Amino acid sequence: MVDKPFKTIDEQLNILDQRGLVISNRESAYRTLSRYGYYEVINGYKDPFMISKNDDDGFKENITFEHLARLQECDRNLRFSVVAALEIFEENLRQAVANIISHDLSYIQGDYIKRTNFNTGKKYYNKRAQKFVYPIDDLIYKLNKATNSEKEPVKHYRKKHGNVPPWILVKELSFGNLVWLCHLLKEPQKNKVLSLMLGIDQGILKQLMQQADLKLWFHEALLLFLSYRNAAAHGGRMYNHFTASHELSYNQVFHQVFDISPADYRNGIGKSRIGTLHKVIAFFDDKTPLIKLEVGLNTDLDSYLKLYPDDKQYMVKEMQYDVESDSQFKN
Image (cartoon, rainbow, N blue to C red; front, side, top):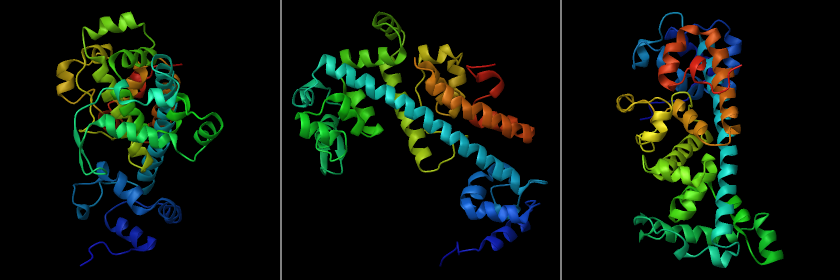
């Protein structure tokens, strides 16, 4: 039996009306549901406005359709800012990895795409190969596959120059594959990439590494970025996004910079909420991604809270970010 039958937009609006949602402009609400869908606007953003988890209990008193639509709009703009910030960071990372591989290993594909140039990683079950493999073997397979891509500029370099150098190859890799390429670099190369991305001297990095494992933090940070990137690509909510599988471990260097104590961390602070994403991006040298992210975190969130100031406590709790105190770039 199908328990979620198709409903026309008028029927959807009638259901919302029956559940106590105030629809002051039915025509406008109709257009919004036509453009974005009931699931995206209502199911995606209704939770803080419901009496209980049971939909039949309805909405809290005086909650309007426009309120939900505004939160969805704010979150959509925030999603755009997250994507823009991570795309810039990704460009930086690709360039850093390509430079280090070219300098330390080789710019000739037959020389730098060698198993011996990387760590093997821990064995895992590979569905494609239908057996347990080392991560390095899967990575080498993907690197070789990328060199045979028909996309430009890979095809041009392969045909014209007989070689796909690292600075071209990294453009063909997905962000997930780039993360694993970073992770499987041997220690000297990984330290150099981290030094470039953080904008600190390798000697200082070595001193910091005596306090905490920044290479582990770096890998976890990249996986956190990947979680947000994937969520954004599929239209997922940003303001209350979190990931238990890719949350940061407590790191004495990183968390203390942002005054997050072990007790705060045990209470869920500094793990994976968007406020943590903001702090991770702020920790890296290039502040351009941070500025892009703060356009959404500050401009759009501030506009929303001016309309609905009573939501501030909820939003700050969900995001672990406060417009008034967390911005790195205040006027």
